[in-house]
Length: 103
Image (tube, rainbow, N blue to C red; front, side, top):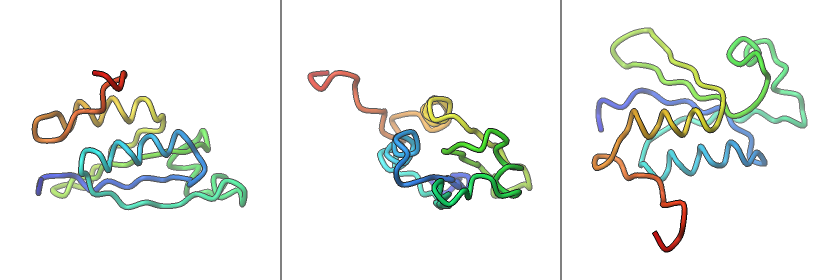
């Protein structure tokens, strides 16, 4: 997995949307750098975060290629989860858990 892009997740510990993304990253074994956005302290309104995510919400994830200066940004948890499944497919990376426990 040495070709993995640098992944940075802007997250808040009480955000269920952020938790979904953190769980998916851990489940797939992907390394990421968390940056904590404290929503109760209005960190989401900082100029640097607003430039990254104009909707001022969490989570925001960035993928930076080690071979170039390009950065790809996603800002919705469901879009992030779908991207993770497409970009990091099984069998190299585990698939998400089945929707039903019996599955």
